Every structure is written in C-alpha cells, then in structure tokens.
Length: 193
Image 1 (spheres, rainbow, N blue to C red):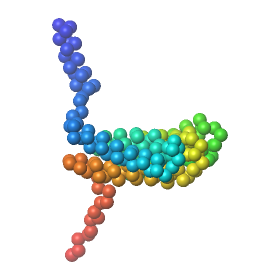
Image 2 (cartoon, one colour):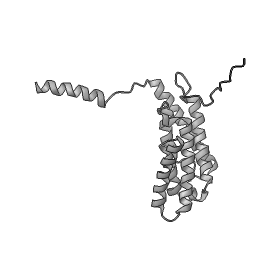
Image 3 (cartoon, one colour):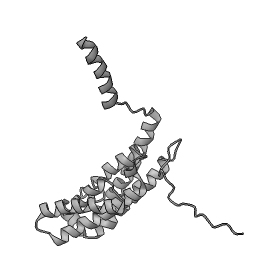
Image 4 (tube, helix red, strand yellow):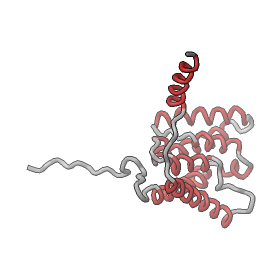
C-alpha cells in the first residue's frame, strides 16, 4: 500500500515539477549560429578597433541577452523594446550613479541596479541583463568609467543593435518568428464614405 501511494504522488510531482521542453536539433543549430554570429561580430569589432584585452565592446550582459533573444525568443523579456530599452535605460542610470557617487562603488552599484529595475518596470522595458549593464557602468574597469555617457552609445547601444539585427535574421528562419508582435503596426484608416 505505501509503495502505491509513493508511486502515485511521485508521478504527480514529476509531472508538475519537471516537464521536458521539446526543442528539435534544428532549433539548437539556429540558436547556436545566431548567438555565435551576434557575439562574434561584437568581438570582431572589439578586436579590430580597440586595443587587445580592453574588451570594451564585450560586456558581460550581452551574453545574458543572447540567451534570451536567441534561445527563448517568445519570452516577453526578449522582445526588441525590452532588449534595446532595458540596456539603454540601465546604461544611462549606471553612468549617472557613477557620476553622482564616484567614490562609494558599493552604494553606486546597488543604486544603479535597483533604480534600473524600477525604471525598466515603469517603462515596460524589463530586460534582466539590463541590470548587469547598469552594474558594469559602475564597477567596470577604468576605461569604461572614463567613457562616461559615451558608454551608453558605444558599447551598449551599438552592441545591442548588432545583437538585435542578427536576431531579426536568424529568428525569422523556418517557423520561428521574432519579434512576437510586429515592430511597425499598420494603422487603421477610417473608412471614407
């Protein structure tokens, strides 16, 4: 009797707690190629135009964004508004916190991330890697800190646009659709009588 009860509840728990995602091999290949090209292009720009080992273009939050925009493209957090807006808003806030509180990195970093989250929520651009973008603006190396608000344009905006354009190409191959909603909506014109 106890074995039957355990088996019965085990099956229910397994069904509720674990559900295998069915992604075919072609999806894995497209995800790999898209993320490889997106991050690879940013890395190429970094290596061709900047001093080796500066890695100003290769900010860590781009890796996390790649997981979202190439791996789980239907997520609301992976949509263009969230991707671009989340990074740009967070970068602006991160640089601002660094300028306001330059000597207390721990306070500036905590404020940058916290204010970024709230700002993304208010603007409906929540993108988790944006929090990392804000934190990198505060805790990054000397070269990133010296950039000031230029950090928002390059590497953040430039890198995000590269990732986005690659995502547009690779996520619209086969049966994938990115973004989930059209970027430009057709306006409904009033009927002329």
